Image 1 (cartoon, rainbow, N blue to C red):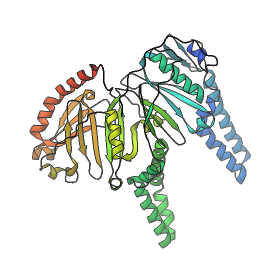
Image 2 (spheres, rainbow, N blue to C red):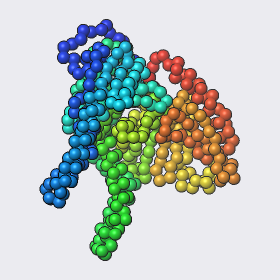
Image 3 (tube, helix red, strand yellow):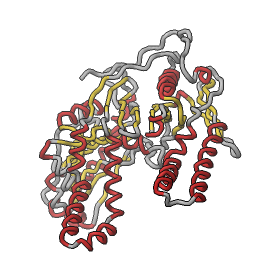
Image 4 (cartoon, rainbow, N blue to C red):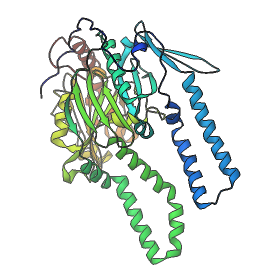
Length: 460
């Protein structure tokens, strides 16, 4: 694979082309509104649910006219609230700042400096896709992962506005075309379905269905009670599997000068950019049921990612699974692009660690070089974590009661990420003390090396 070059130099300002698309006046300092149908998308699920209930009642004639009027009134209220929100929301770009004003009783004026924009993601919920609309989600620099959003614009306008805002953020002319990208990987939908079917939650669900069928055949009267008692767990597991399938369907990873671009989704799609310097850790997971097929999964942890709430759900799904399921060769190629020159040699723990972790012992190891640390652990599934030393914010040494008795300790490498943590588990106490003493200096040296990069391969 070839390395990525720097962003192209700025070109002289080009004349504004005719029909430049929506948002041209806003980029020139004039105020713009969101798409008029934004209210419909915002109402979304609640309105659709009420309409479905009304349709079922009308067909079956089970509901009274008063109930239907109440439901219709609720739909009207939801749409009216969305319409008011659309009327009081406007945006523009002025003096290098994206301004978003909104609110009826309590006005809110938000400012997003374009120079602090790290990435702009495009998210399309199911209803928005049907109506040809998309949401722009801005990710700003900062430890808390603050973000802004424009929900919703037409799909064409959203793509054009994204390219223009990014060009202006990089000091280029607003009509500078988006930099080209090179695809690295695309998930095979058949392999994704197969991997989900043999995953732990799916196999537990399949076993429960078999048990339910057997109970229904042997003792039909008890089947209803069994189904009722396990309905919550059944729906929870089914929902988790569906969300993972929907969020990782046809996931595509591409490489561009501004970072890695990740696109995925079946009903709700998202297009996310992982900027350079934001990757805090990588994790390679090899579940027990996947290992006979040589499959694995790569997850990525980003600095300051906001993982809670409905707004961030799609971005969380797309960003966390960098490789939902693939071969070890595909995983190694992707890891090399994100973290080149990771350590390959691993150190095993002392033999007495078997008493503390009999199931995990055969997988325990760690490796270290001047740029990265790697740790391996796992009982039924093998988990390998890579952490750039330049991203480590603290180093901790811990001892549990059993570890103290047999002279072992663990060393934790903490980063700004929230999901992946590298831990050199069950090391000899003297080895753990040595790591605790040497790692802070190694991390400082790695950070100095990253800030001093002038040429060569750019890092994530």
